[in-house]
Length: 463
Image (cartoon, rainbow, N blue to C red):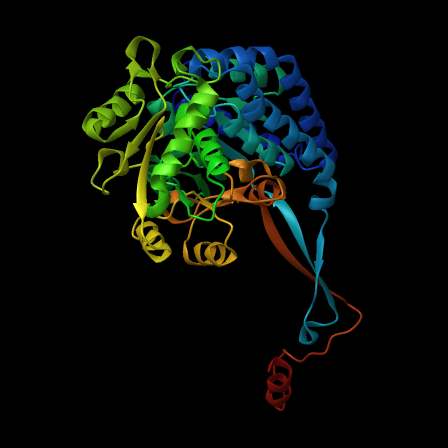
């Protein structure tokens, strides 16, 4: 890994800002060519990416393609198809008292964008915002996670061979390098990670008044009421929870199940676990591994504290960084599994007596990144979606909303700031510059001094 210090950072910022100021990134044709180049490079490195994801996270080929590589392919294609339309100046109305004039909005690039990726989906969550930054006409500094070294090395090689460093550059490293980057006078920061680190990023950015997008997390609930199809609800929750061994920021973090169907629903969840991963999940090619020893130890500590509440699973193998898909009973919010976002293959189950109680339980804690509701009742759906604040989610499914590029993806409150995907990515990485163009052909003089006898007319116009 090349050394990276403050001098290297200053040199990088200079060449990227020079590249941007010379207008190289501004034309739509240039941006489209870069997206095509990125897609071609991804095709060349596809096998290397799959191999790296398996080494770092134990991701099987299907999961690696669907949640990382294929996701990015689709996003690039969608951006290429729509970019020219989104980038056109947008005409807006002009009030009568400002006539004769025309008003419109220009979408202007920020300049140099810093994108910091996490370890859980280390390819998708770094390259997906990169697509938006390229489409917006920016230069980019990419900081992949140090916790997925194989994938980070592949990304470094892919980007280095595809783009000049004056345009897009990958910086490897850990906390020291990240700290240097977030304190730099870049033009925008896009960070994906925990709320705790997100606050550090935002504080550092504030010193240079750098705008930020924070894609964070939290304890995302799944609510299951008695009208739901319990078999399908169980399968969809189990799939969403244990995808990537539970290391998904929008995974269901706990389940709130209506009291009268608790036993039946737990039975369905156990059946789904058996169907998906068999009697020995450690042998399953479709179940991943914990990213590193530190995360493994954190999760095992939770299992040990909540040992008496385990309903299913609970086994682990330290040498494999494997933790079995585990269901626990959450008696209260004092349980170890309910203290913070789990980010692992442990799923606590709580019961509720009334919908109002379930809603209150969620409202009493930080706003989650996602919420999943399983019901056939439109009244229940309306109550939950209007009374609970959360980033986004699904009714009768989990996680799949993130794959719809027509929907914004992002958090609210403690779970994040800003949203991206599809057009929302283009809008995020551009500044909406409002312009009003007046004509030389006519001037009313209404706003020019002297103002005698003009106030009455102005009052009539502005009311």
